[in-house]
Length: 368
Image (cartoon, rainbow, N blue to C red; front, top):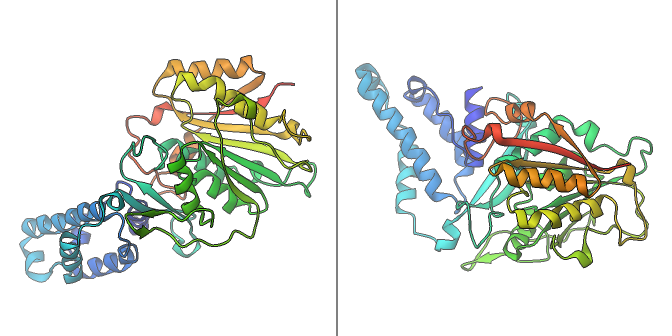
């Protein structure tokens, strides 16, 4: 259903598919459209994106009126659309740092069954690079891997195959906004999820997106989220430096006997970081500094990336082999298609037309 595609795009601030001009020009349809989208219009964040969207809607309707004089005589633009657009124009300018932040809502579930959709709310920055990091927004590789998890959740996120009493620890490296880890937790809340990053701005944003009490994220005096105590104790955020070889890997509890799944997206971008990244993955799958070796034989990593620099990606793959990691390429085509606006997965936040062929996904495991 076209309107459901638009809802998902609007909520995620993804490039939207605008309904057909003839449909939009009818007042009753405009009323339906505004009623469905107005629930996402109360957030202070994202004003600039919404201004562009509603301007486009109004422009499409006006052009259709000019094309069809009969429509112009019989229909009009819903007054609420015009008033909302004007209110956005005249809205008091927020603190610049707040204006850079948008609330993105990522839905997934059967496209034609809106009541059954699941969602993930994330505060993200508009800018690709902000505060010296790319980790304050979600990227295509994280959505690709997220959709791969949804499509293969029974095989990847269920309890360990040979012992249903054992749980799995999901460790997301370079978590950024936390999309992957949050999705993994939603798909199987029995699993323990550890989010990790190195940049403190990203760590703070992670905690706000996770709704943890550890940090109160205020920007320009504006409190982004109220924090609740995390009573589950199976979600945590840790600071990890891949190049700190004294703490390579992420240790489990001493009594841990389950398996580990390492998730990561767009981690391979700097050749100088590749050795530390691979060492971190290896030691997290088979901890060297913990008293228990865990379920290492069942542990594996899933790393997805947009290969912008093939030589850096090749270095990553070769380094994995040198450090005793088996590398298996996985097919991402279904995951990419699952992110289309008319499909059931998480929609891609940016257009992937130019980079869709550059998405790669590998499974890493400890060599026997």
